[in-house]
Length: 184
Image 1 (cartoon, one colour):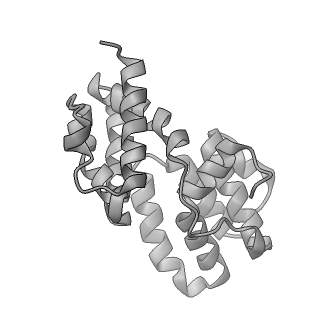
Image 2: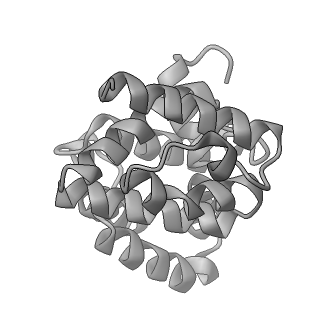
């Protein structure tokens, strides 16, 4: 994955598990019922266009028109799934950790928009926090403090309590990005 642009690599790292889940279900159709439940949840969380495209893929459609209307991230995911189906060696590694410095600006923007009352940002952030909670470890702790960040808490010592070095680094990067968005 080293030759991929950093943003693409970051998307693949963050969503590696989902990409593998979809590819595995495409290869082993007995896994489709579980995948369909995940797709229903993803659709409810605001990923309707990607889910629609994936349902076309599940039904055997592979033409480029299924990408119409997808945003950049959804297109990256769909491409990775199709590549992974054709050649499993192209799948992103499941153990790759997202780069916190790349994630912080996007998370900060979502937190800031949520704090200003943006309903769509709140929905996306809530879904992300839920996924983080399921991941366990530092990601679960970070997911657990999202509401506090939206509500304006910025005490790094309180927010990082119980986190390991990588979690603290990500949270500190996030606080730095939030400070850039709303300088005091």
